[in-house]
Amino acid sequence: MPSNAPHSSNPLLEIAGLNSHYGPVQVVHNASLSVHAGELVALVGGNGAGKTTLLHTLSGLHRPSAGSIHFDGQDITHWPTHRIVAAGVCQVPEGRQVFAPLSVEDNLKLGAYRQYRNHGWVSQEMERVYTLFPILQERRQQLAGTLSGGQQQMLAIGRALLGHPRLLLLDEPSMGLAPLLVEEIFRVIVELNSQGVTILLVEQNARAALAIAGRGYILETGRITKTAPAADLLADDDVRRAYLGY
Image (cartoon, rainbow, N blue to C red; front, top):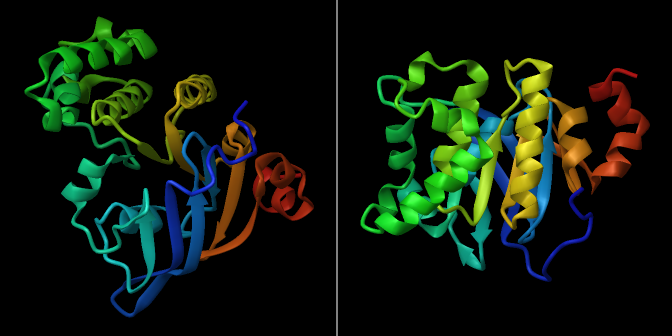
């Protein structure tokens, strides 16, 4: 189980007063959160709460209208996406978004495009992914679009790992998956965190996310309304009524 305590004194990621709009519509309102190196932090909210917009703003896919984003002490608020990725922020998008006409192996290699000259490292990291997800090795020549939803989620995570992330952003990894597959995906997330990968897990499945996280944030209609150790949020009556169904 990830620790509730921060692993370092200064956050690896710090978002402060973040606002994000789509035209005149404000989706994220004055959001602030932090993730320390080595942590597994959950950002939990219902459908339409603004979780994906917040991640897209963090990744440079959507421009903030106010606030700041710092990564490893650098202000990345207005950096382009490719520079943010190069700094080590890698996102697994909602809906997986694998390259359907390409093989499993080619999808993984695309994740390593920044390291393409370092053949030894790429081979080593691909073996790491195949160890985490043996089914991907078995189907490495299969077209990604013919995989099951769970296998595509494994592939999307593997592709992000080939980007050599210092911070891994996971957007709704349990979406559309059967309970047994959700359990397997979350087991791997815990294993990656135990190996030192810093993770921000964004989920509608509050019970599953908070069960494995060290700390959590609750996002409601674009506003962060609660933050606490994940175990405390699981025991919070308001959170239980709103997200856990009891």
